[in-house]
Length: 249
Ligand code: 13P
Image (cartoon, rainbow, N blue to C red; front, side, top):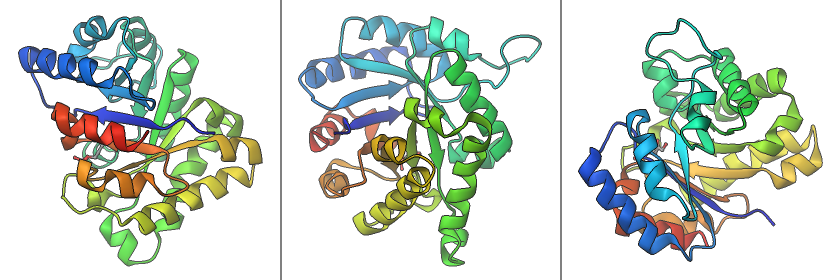
């Protein structure tokens, strides 16, 4: 049985006072959620949010991580620092990092390895653009993104990771993949991993991300290979996010 996960990726939103109110409301509402709840604030707020989450069931995650261990890498944050600040998870390979900050498959794989080496659980994002979907190469793209990590980290590393399918065309657009489209991509990912190791493929938790809302969460999470969600915009509203969490349990 795969325990469902709902992770909120705040992206570059929120300031101290509103973060504190949002987290307080989440703590009140999520304590009895039987899914695992994760929130991923901007780096600068991790410490403070982490302190607020202490002794609660909500876990802390980072939105990215540096591939290097330490040294002269101005502006970067290492996996060990994130762990030290209380993170359990780190998102790697988010499409915004891939597209806007030119992170390629090789760098994403190194970030994945760096996160695990420091004891973090990577949430590896994969997903195709609209142009790639229209060209019919969705599986090629997702397969390539996944294989790049497996090649470097090994398939067994996926036993300590989460994979998020985030079709780029569905992120922040209000367009959601249909439950059947999400299921097809998730089944493909699980199959790709299971072909190398059936146990790891079977146990891998796969999140859907891309305009998840309270109104569509239950239908998406109802699919057999959708084990929860990676939520952007809707994770900034406590009520909405808690309803999404409830849909996953
Ligand atoms: P939205 O839920 O705002 O579409 O964002 C999804 C996402 O990118 C989560 O990482």
